[in-house]
Image 1 (cartoon, helix red, strand yellow):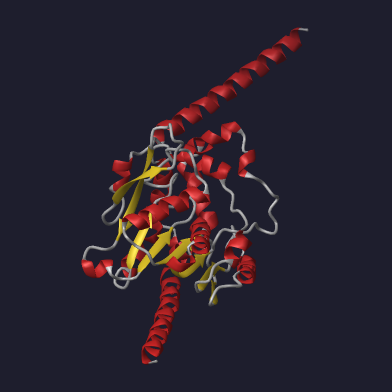
Image 2 (image 1 turned 135 degrees about the vertical axis):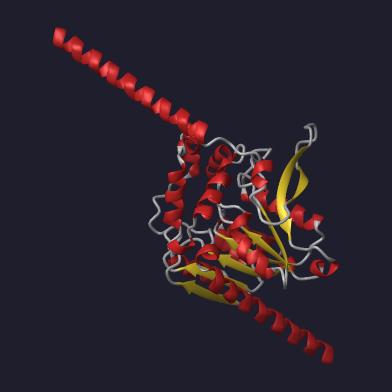
Length: 347
């Protein structure tokens, strides 16, 4: 029996050593990749970042909660304010920084509005722990009301696409056009049907255990055009997660995510729609474009453009051609609208 005791003792030492190694790893990662305050993170953003404290709906007897929304508005003059308003809605896991290149170029013709969703970037965790699409839409509605914007062009990437077509379906009279880039809305045909609600409790802290190379690998999986991946992009992407509370909040968003009946929502959209999609999108295959086209039965116009050697992040992977195509689509709408107004005035 001596040999059994020796084996048992050896196994105990092995298990103890493995536990100590795991604890050392977790502690090291936690110390190296500490949280970043919103104040420090804001220094990495190009242009002026503004904040809006938005009162949230609460029960009558509860103290009112306010969500601080961080946003950017290109308008610096009365002329800018009078330009057509264009809202850029970022992808899940990204921030409004993903639109830096586009925002700068679009500002000459549009009043460009963008913001960080809760659990992303500067805005941080939702103070009421509500990460539903309805909650995101409420914040956008309040921001637009604050800015006194009634008519908008919506440009949404991935999760931002979900928000764009949800808003357009519920506010048809306030939406001039919708641009959906690799939009969420439908499951992959090969999806195994997993649900965020099924995540185990320990998953809440999963993102704290991942080193930066894991986030870099995630970016490399999403982005097919590797020329778009720069050290600065990787650092910005990782820092967005490291804002105080975001890593925990992101897991709550995954738990709560529910796209709803996307087909029914898309059917309600009457505004013109441009669909832009990466042909090699690993997350949402290009075949999903057909599902959007089939559902957009009430839209006055649906145009589709797909891009070779492009994955899930069009604005980063095809920045110039993607932007030029979108501007061409919007310019055509403006010309068409001008012709209609001229014909009406001539009657």
